[in-house]
Image (cartoon, rainbow, N blue to C red):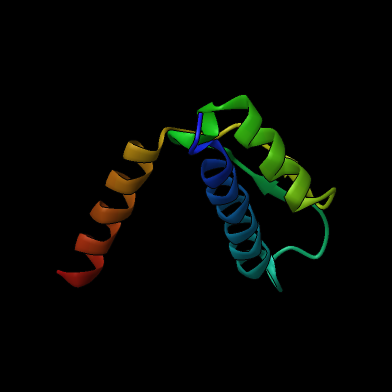
Length: 85
């Protein structure tokens, strides 16, 4: 359809931005391979995941999440409340 080119451009830009963010986040923290979990709406799309994995390069290794994002967020919030009280 007519918007397909624009949609592909948005996806390419999203992949570039996410990969750049991951590289900045990993800088100095991981001297070797970087474990990365693909999670969320776009990550469920095999084509998006593949494009992101290619953009990240070989240093980033797919890893299974230890728990889902909501459980992790709840745990972090509980810890923050303990620290603040």
